[in-house]
Amino acid sequence: MTTILSSSHAPSLALPAGLDRTGVERIVREIMLRSHGVPPSQAAREPQRRDAQPKLVVSISARHCHLTDEHVERLFGPGQKLTPHKNLYQDGFYAAEQTVMLVGPKRKMLPTVRVLGPTRKASQVELAFTDGISLGIDLPVRPSGKITGTPGCVLVGPAGAVELAEGVIRAERHVHMSFADAEHFGVKDGDRMSLLIKGSCGTVFRDLLVRADATSKLEVHIDTDEGNAADLDHPESVELLKQTGHTGPAPGWG
Ligand SMILES: [Zn+2]
Image (cartoon, rainbow, N blue to C red; front, side, top):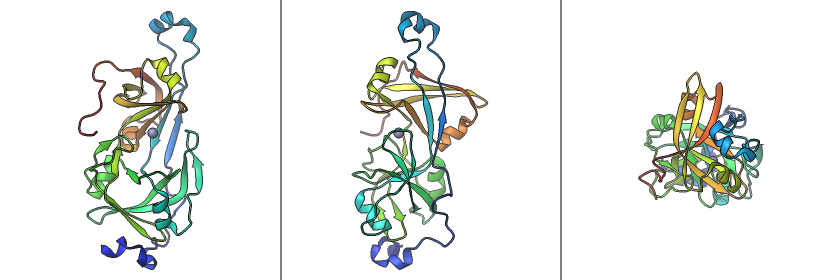
């Protein structure tokens, strides 16, 4: 185990021959869905907003990681940068051509974890519970960036390996939006909303964390477990709802 932690043993760290580094898996399946119109009661109160319903996009984030500049160089070689492969819905963000291998605490591994860009101040791995079960990692549910005390793992690239002491999470379901969208829904950054999905496996996801800023486009991020459970490849409709009742953060992090 120790040999793969050392970037000085680069020759032994090459990925297995035949591993498809670019086409194994779609990472982010974006489902463009125009949400239903404003409910009649709300339309009656706010007739001027009837045509202002923001377009709702629900995206399923497959397992992925974010890396620091330093970790990119240790995994892919000195001077290496992430290469954009596919732009994500949010402006400035992309799936990189690069992928890494993830090795868990029981030496079980995931051969292909896509790297998303741009780079960050701290490396972080976002997995679904199903991934955690296969790796033997009891994943904590965290908002992105809240990784203190979370499990670690080893990431392996073609030029070296990185041991993360922490940073492996299941990303908490959330919705990005602009301040204008937040005003439209009557919520603010840090509030909670519900996502109503109608279809063959219709469900309501509660407690989506609202992440509002000046520039984000309206987009829900859930993971593959959630998307598959709701058959989100074949929805009849999706609707974002202001939530009453519990509006605080999930317990257990902070
Ligand atoms: Zn997100």
